[in-house]
Length: 450
Image: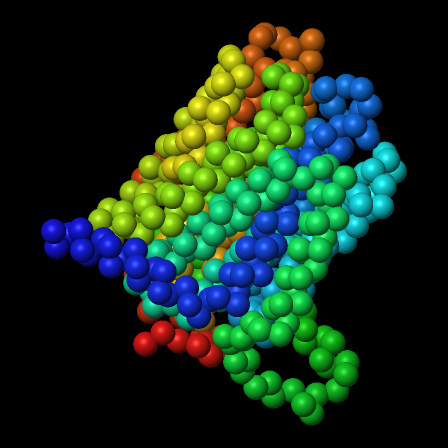
């Protein structure tokens, strides 16, 4: 009875801790809804524009892989840089910049969906992803860490990722119910409302330390900026490298993202080519994962975390991601992808468990640096995975495949997740935040939880 009361209190405490995050989570949820509602329809739009009348479009697969590679190259530098800037100059301005970039690519698809406009969309979307992909969530996690007590962060991160899943479900419902011609227009309206809301209602959690360069000349300031960025990036690297927990999490995140990003980049095109799935089937699969994710992240994670800890949750979620990949890769009937998607209920816990372990191993003044530096290592995975996945998927979907296994590339990607699981089993999560302060931090939290 006492144990049940304790787990219920853990669940409710996570909900109570969300109150100071209301003005962050509301626009973020709208942003996630707007982005998700375009996912399922983009496959049909790009395939129709680039390969008219065909169900398989190698050109679209290669362009998506090329886009992911370019994004991965630049994110290696941009993500840690944005994390450092959020630690030094505040979370709010960086969130406003990153969340605004998602608006512009979809304007082109509202205007026209011809081949030329789809190519232009890919260019703008690549630039947008370099700035916003991963950074929005990492800076939001750092914002939450500013105002949430360390012992309650896992529950709060579970609620945040649960809201992400709920937003995805709502976005998939809108994509499934709205006519295709209205989806991008509605998405733009929702995306535009997010930075406007943040501008007026979001409270800053960081007070930048005063600078002592008022008497410096213009040229001295210009020369000093790259030096400060280099020092800050080196400090972020030291934070991760000299912490066994953070170093281990960097390896776990790298190999997990290497496998999962490769699968995500080709999965919908694979399902369209093999089983003839369209917008409705894609939305059903995404809704299935999203609904289960809401339960696991908002209800299950806050209850399990005090009982078993983040490491057990992380290892279990990684094991589920391996099963997810194998079922998709070996899918022999149209119902098998639905069975595979059901494992999404468990593997989505990889993210909140990862954020919680990183946050607990980082000091209060290094949250942005640690989260975004490890996210930067994931961007290396985003760079590498399409180099193998795009040609391998196209090859095994073609008539020239060396043997009959259309999902062979997905099975290969699962090997990376097996390696990630091995590194996760070796982790020894510990509270190292007190020993992880690097002298010379540029900010102090404005809002704290007493």
